[in-house]
Length: 229
Image (cartoon, rainbow, N blue to C red; front, side, top):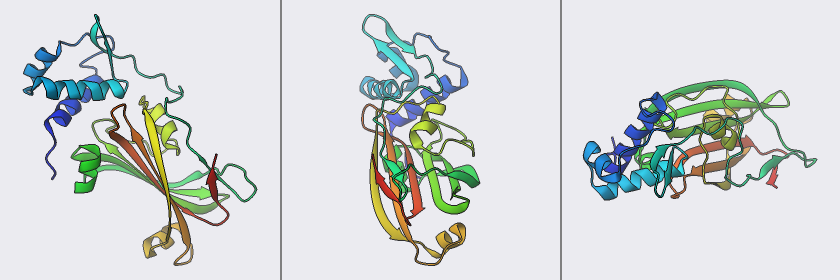
């Protein structure tokens, strides 16, 4: 298992305290020196952790006021991240999906995921999605377990909406698009021919410091799909 950096250890424990109500909304936290001593880390390490939590919208740091536990983001409020491009069908209309099957869980991070998230354990959500009644996409969400211990199987499909519903507001969302062919397991899950063309859309949500807080990978049957604003 990948070793978690000290600042990530501090972040994880602070997120847990906020999530569990040990640090309620509006609570004023000790200064950096006091927190660093409490968590057994250097002041610089603690400052890095505080900046990350502020970027996640969990803390409010104001000159002269100190550091306060921020009010949770209102569910349904729009994220500060720019709107992503959209999947469009052959007529130029936005593509919508419905849930066919889902499985949520937690697991240890791979070395690559640990490098990306700085976390040893992840919450995951794997779903098969329908379009016009047919199985059309495979969806996978991964994020640190400390942020969301359990992802609901009926969580919104779009990553920005999912994070907003969880009270998280990313500073940015990056996107990449690639093409591939179905594997044997993909073909079975999607009930399609072997070597069917897929679009692979990867979205990564970032905090204010540019660190990844969530990733979504959508593998979609490419027939008739385009991608744009």
